[in-house]
Amino acid sequence: MQRVITSFATDATGDPIALLTCGHPQHVRHRPPFFERPWVTTEAGRAGMLGQPLECVRCDRRELPAEFVAYKRTPEFTETTIPRGLSHDHTTRQGVWGKIVVLEGSLRYHIDASGFTALLTPETAGIVVAEQPHRVEAVGPVRFFVQFYRAP
Image 1 (spheres, one colour):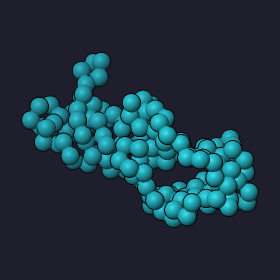
Image 2: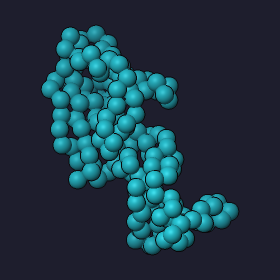
Image 3: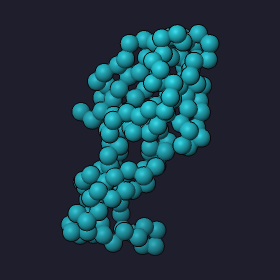
Image 4: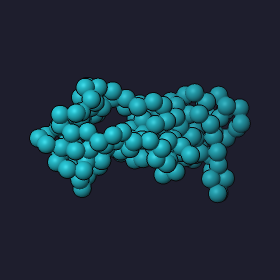
């Protein structure tokens, strides 16, 4: 999934890391022939890449950024009280992730852009990637809520 570079940092060994709008850090090394990124070797080159998209494999895996913290949650919903908006494609704001927590029953979670569908149960939560269109549908009786996460 393409995410925009917002800034740069370095790791403990001095290798450059791109910080992305999704909240994930990603190494951006220039190590030919494996990685061809000559722009990363200079301050001007990195500055020129700010605002440019970069593939984020952690978003593709629906991996919640490690340092993100829970800050808000919805009320509990049932199959009869699911807000209409959750049944249609919708997104979170930039930098906001979610976790769909099923307390009882099951819920089908769809991410149509990638063809992903999962059955969420009390044992299996659904991770909502920031800004990625998704929707849910009840599969019989269900009780669930959504917990939201962002950078500290």
